[in-house]
Length: 227
Ligand SMILES: O=P(O)(O)OC[C@@H](O)[C@@H](O)c1c[nH]c2ccccc12
Image (cartoon, rainbow, N blue to C red):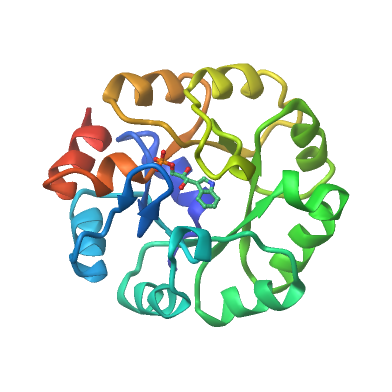
């Protein structure tokens, strides 16, 4: 049986640093991140370095491509998280049809519809990773049945134009009162020190840019996972 993302994080965290490795095509700050490489080669590098899961951004603001999501899901046994600005039930169903195992839902975007969208994700057999960036967002996610809370160290509505570091995770993780949910720290994690700080108050981290900008993503990821 292939475990979902939440369960895999719980198993991995006993042995390694659980890292959700992101295949990120483009960054508003750094520009093109794929740099003519093959997406599947990047996927294999992440698999070889023991990523706990794969994240792929389909959002057009990040030059993502839904066909690539389908290809990645077909090519890997790891759980795949689809990241986009999800605003409709159809997009949830499309994510399930691509055979992703988890979907990103943004509390800031969905507001009090978040709980309903989490239930819709579950109806499509998808795990819900609800992303938060404020105390208000935490209240919203706690009204839902989301199994994974993603603390974004940046405000995604600013499309990475803002700075953000693990101090956001340190501050917000303390506000989570409903226990038993997996907490993931995402964005702006560039060094093993950032990772260690994040894992003091989160169960896993999600890293994109630092891996995509590395000359050798496999060894870069291995240094985070085994560090
Ligand atoms: O590249 P970074 O700093 O490691 O951040 C990764 C990830 O957190 C970021 O890409 C992200 C977080 N939430 C999103 C929502 C949409 C698109 C992208 C994102």
